[in-house]
Image: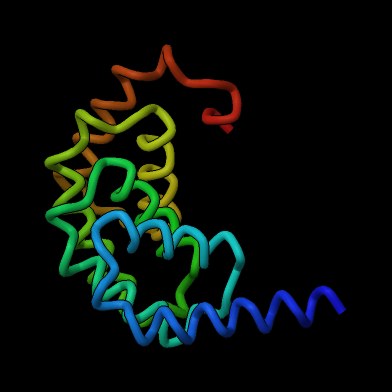
Amino acid sequence: GREGEGARIIAALVGRGVEVYAEFNAQGVPNALWSLATLKVDPTLPIIDVLCTRAMLLAGELTAQGVANSLWAVVKLGRGTKMEGRVLYALSERGVEIVPELSPQGVCNCLWALGSAELRAETPFVSALILRAESVVADLKPMELS
């Protein structure tokens, strides 16, 4: 059926992604992570670890949206991600630099991800996100507030 066909397509794409992950750039990594998280793939698939490794290597090149999407995806994939803590740290380091560029939705995604990951520490990124949230709160849409 259709469900089996979809699973085969995803398996083929994931297999190919593992083969070519080193070619994923600073736009491709967040897009792939976001897509896989949205599809709710098994977080123990090898593609997740290779994309997380690539995200850490490319963290300094990620855009504000790339950081927000990657944070959201890594946390959404859940605790099955072996490298979750290291990836979140690398993304948070980059996050401090790009906070002023974050859209209201990006601010919400980052705050959700860090809160869901139960990062209790008041990090420079969290502090910067809180200040940014205060400056964009008037621009938030109802969906972003939920």
